[in-house]
Image (cartoon, rainbow, N blue to C red):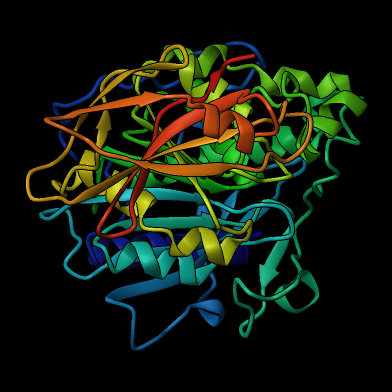
Length: 427
């Protein structure tokens, strides 16, 4: 313990020297109103999660690469489990020039099932000028040679610190503080608190992005923690128990105690800009759960991507998360905005297209009933003066097997950045 305290003290001094340490002496910034406790009480979370955790350096696991425009340091930050002192491994990326005098936006990165903290994901955000923190949520430490393409056996080793493992809610009947989801949610919120404590971070511009199970966690914590400037769940979100199909839906059916985490009440109350990025044919989470969650939120954008795959590598490669974050906190070019949603089998959707962008428009339709992965047909439409007219035709009905049951419109720019409407159910 004495050795650990010594390491903590040395790390604090080093970080203060480089301008990225504890902001104890900072003046209070003017900006968004943020709360230092949970803003929703569906699950009781202690106020201590909103305080910066202790952390210490693990230089042996730092990552260096000619392609990193900054640095990526390995750290452990405190996240206790079942009353025992414990620490979660994480990669902390600092872009070039970040300091107390030049604070940068930041992003919390939450991995999915079978994953860990990915330094390549941190690099993607660091190279775009973001401070980035990617933590492990299952008591693992990445192998030096591990990448987002590796399976678990080649990706990580066990940490020296105790932590639960993701059991797909098989532990949901335990006291909630002993479950993996409680630990994962707590560790993620502590990671956000750590980012907010760094001098080189602009605390008004801290967002979160999560993949698969990390998308579920991102959705959950965004409803409890109002400090996020943007939130990007990828592949999976909430309202999965309401869906008629999908792998995650089966977990909630098998373990109904877990439905306390599937509640979107908190998420629907916050003003945080949300991007729900997902596949339109994902067996893990069908698109109705994505659309239903977005429809209940104040400030949501949907992006349903066709011909995509469900993996960390595929998620890291999509342009939408970076474009969305930049549009919110970094002055980047805006994405297409859907101003009105489709209603009925024919009508008009109003969109806003950023000046200079070239956009193609399609209607996607299916005859499926969302109890299994839908098969979609796609027909191109023609926008005119910021409006897109659509109609379910006889040809579309025939292609859908006799009746179109669901449809949506989607828009793609020259950078392959996709934005969609919400789903419409016709039957």
